[in-house]
Structures are given as structure tokens and as C-alpha cells.
Length: 141
Image 1 (tube, rainbow, N blue to C red):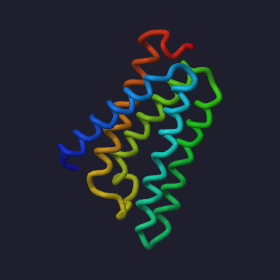
Image 2: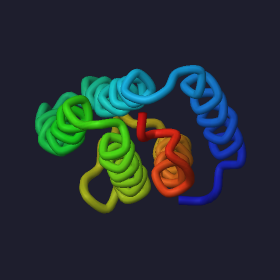
Image 3: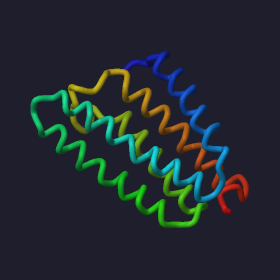
Image 4: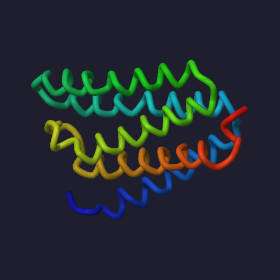
């Protein structure tokens, strides 16, 4: 997979916008927004899989998504600092999933630029959340 500068640029712009918007909120409310955003990411892969006549791709995508849904459910039930850590792990795992997707299985319905774009958004948000956990008590309220 070559570097698609448009996908990377859009990932940087969108993740920066998301972080900026979510920073209007604090504590548990902010973590809820990050959790629900993470919960939407597998849905894109489901949608891509619907373009594939073979239903086995959708089954594989659903199987992988269970991990992310469990992380979201856990993050919604704990204090903000722990939620930020769980979500950081979830976002970084999803970035890894995006970037290694074709090594696991091929989803022919997925656009070629998607893994780099989505992985960029996930990675930036995940690193930001990790930074928040170690930076200040901002996530501890």
C-alpha cells in the first residue's frame, strides 16, 4: 500500500477537527463521545462488505468488530481516566486493524484508500487520548 497523501491529509484534518470538537466537553461526557465514535468504525467495514456478493466477508468483519464493541461497552462503564486508556487502546488497535486489514482478509468492497485514511484518524485520536491520560488530570474528572 503506497502513501496516499490525500487520505493522510484528510485523516489529519478530520482527526484534528474531532479532537477540537470533543474538547468542548470534559470527563465522562467527553469519553462517551469518543466511545460512540469508536463504535461507528466497524459499521463502515460492514457497509463495504455489503458490496461483496459472498457473505463470508461480512461475517469476518462482524467477528473482528466484537472486540471494538466490547472495548466501547467497557469504556462507557468506568471512570474517565480509565475510559481514556481503554479507548486509546481501542483506537490504536483499530488503526492497526486498518493498516493490516489486507493481511488478515480481503474486503473487495473497501476503497483502496480507506485503510490509510481510517488508520490515520484512529491513530491520531488514539495517541491523543493516550497523551491525555499521561498529561494532566484533564481526564480525571
